[in-house]
Length: 250
Image (tube, rainbow, N blue to C red; front, side, top):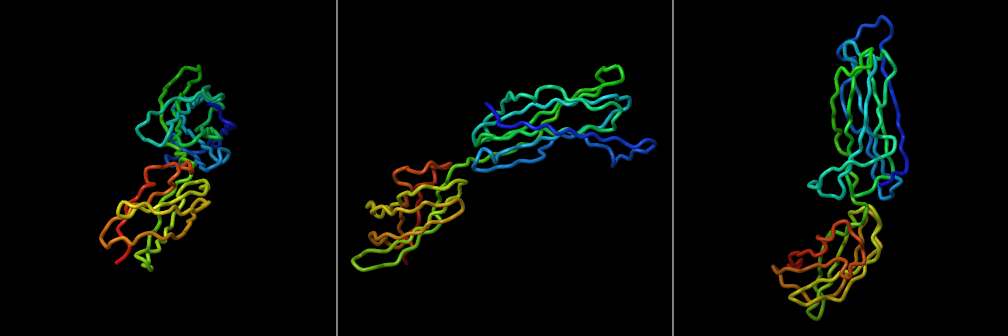
């Protein structure tokens, strides 16, 4: 896996000479998500992870090592796996004599759907360069949602017309992140399938509405609405394209 851009930002914290440190002034020991940017375009997807650590008594320098992990797909049951990223695996080291050390690493052009997190290993070194203490923390996850379109039935209504027919008004919303191409919708009433109604294209977050004539449904019966009958739209969720609704006629 190759990421487009890697940026490392380092920060250090030092007390002025003669200053007294208060507990509230100390740099906390933490590993966190500094930013998590999502979007339909890979160039819009990025994550930054920050580690921070306070100096211990006798600490001369502090070090951190970041490792990026990815959980591919949308399922939370999938395990995280380490991702090899140039510039991430080496130790970064503070200047000597600092009271605290803060370091941020950023990665861009993330794939989606996926979740990303970082493990941060902290190490404290004494004046001889010996490790006083080493521990590891894991950041929360940056979730990158599926960027594809997702069609959902927004509403269904009907008005009785002549000849035992009804005019059915159908609204379909795109809950995804990219535009949905034109698609066909049908109704199944008492086992009979209507002529298709073509809707779209539909922008993200928008709705498309149209109407079709089909046999009147009996009050209390069930109608089956099938979105994207021909499967022309690549969706993040396909399982909600067949929906059952109560007959909208009283």
